Structures are given as C-alpha cells and as structure tokens.
Length: 325
Image 1 (cartoon, rainbow, N blue to C red):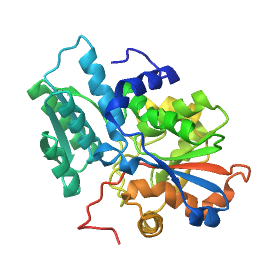
Image 2 (cartoon, one colour):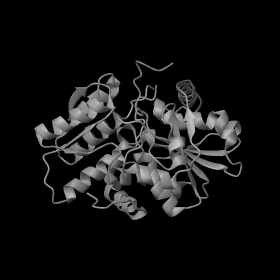
Image 3 (cartoon, rainbow, N blue to C red):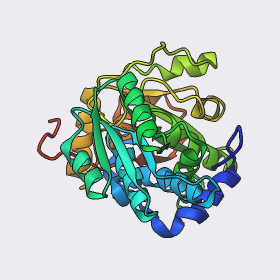
Image 4 (tube, rainbow, N blue to C red):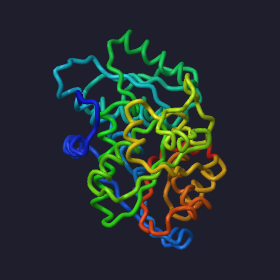
C-alpha cells in the first residue's frame, strides 16, 4: 500500500497500469436533447457500465492488488458498504483468490446484497448507522484476521478511482469542467487529482445530496461536520455519508471548486427517470444526481464560459423491484 501522506498524478497513473487489464475503459456518450436543455455540450462518462455496475471496482481492485504486491501477508479483506464498494471488493478479492467479508446495513437493496454473495464474499448485516457499520467491520476484521479496505478513506482506493479522470482527459479534449457525485469523497478526490494534474484549467464540481453541506466546509476550508458523523436520509442509497473522509478532505478542499451543486430527492428521481427514458441508460439514484444538477436551475449560476462539461454517471445498480418512482 502507499506509504505516503498525499496522493499525486503518478499514483493514479500507476493504478491505471495495475488495474487496466481487469476493468472496462468505459465509454463517453452525448445527448442532443441534454445539450439543447442546458445550452452546453455535455459528455457522459458511463461508469454504470463498469464491471460490478459502478466505478468502485477501480479503487477496490487497486487496493487489493497493492496488498498482494506488498510484504504484508493477509488472510483476506473486509469492508462496510451500502453495496457498490462491497460488490467491488468482493469481485477484486475473488480475482486475487483472497477471502472477503462485507458488512452491509440492513435495508440495502437486495440486488446489491445478492451480487456481493455472487462474488463469493461473506455478508454480515449491521444497523443502518455509521457507528454500527464501523464497529461491526472492526469486530469482523479482528475475529477473522482481515485487513479493512475502506470505501474512500484510503490512498490506494482513491488512486484507483482517479483512473476515471485519466480516461476522461483522453476521451474529451478541451474539457472545461467535470461534475462528480460526492459522498465520502474518494471518487472526486481521485478524479480531481488526475484531471487537475493533466489539465489544471479544468474545473471539478461536486454534486451532493441535501444535508451534506459541503459548500460551507469548502468556503471555510475546514471539516465543519458534526461528530459523530450523521447518516443522511436520501433516495441515493449509495451516498448516505455526510462527511468527506479524513484522507480525501485536503484534496477536495484544495482542488474542487467552492461552488457545490446540491440536489433534492425529487430532483434525483426526476433525473434518474429522464436518464432511463430519454438517454436509454440505466443509472441508480446516486448516478443520476449529477444529471439532476445539470438539469436544475442551479446550472444557470455556472460561468457561461464553461461550455464543455463531463458528467460522471457513477453507477447502475438498481433494485428494479423497488424503483423510486
């Protein structure tokens, strides 16, 4: 694993070399309808088409492969997850022939739970709070002798997620901005490291669910969230984390724009339905949040010189028996 106190473009490039043969280079697509609505050129990065159905496999696989490369022998890995990171770690562990346990909050969509089991991992249920998730994960790690691979508070994980940024810069020349859904911050920290490292003038904007209050923290330059951390109630079940993690925070603080796009559950549901019906693309609620941002009136507050925008559709794991509409 990385023995460093920061992350750089070089870390992301090494992650790309490490995991490239095992993941999809996901496509970019456009929509004339969206361009007409927004008055801008919008490019969609389809991570909903990634292995395991979300971007999470990039970070999980990089972390697992780093463990295999290190001198630290391990009996396996463990994490706590609302589903996507759990699926990704289970898949990565299976590829590495490594045992895996995933702590899952009760109420997680069954499609995600069954997918985790399908990759051969053990599922351990806990209460739907951050405290219960962390305590249960720590207990399982100690009892089974497993190494905890967190969903975002980990340099190897962030570097893996940053490979999306490398692909975006290659696929969309002369980009002006990237819109990224934000929960614990691993995805946006990784993408910002890559994008700003390659194209410093490209702006990276965070999209958040209501209750996260990221803009206030960015403007203050401090993590102002309450302690203990709160679990947000949102239709975007993959993004219940209110706080940016300790390791992603300084990256997000320094590289991400202070203007944050906050979307409501109603806007997310409408954007999810729009993406399904008009773009013929299956995204989960969290994956639809950046679409909600660019379809909202908030986009009118964006600098008009920002014309070429890439929107990261981060996942497509949907419980089709319980659609939000």
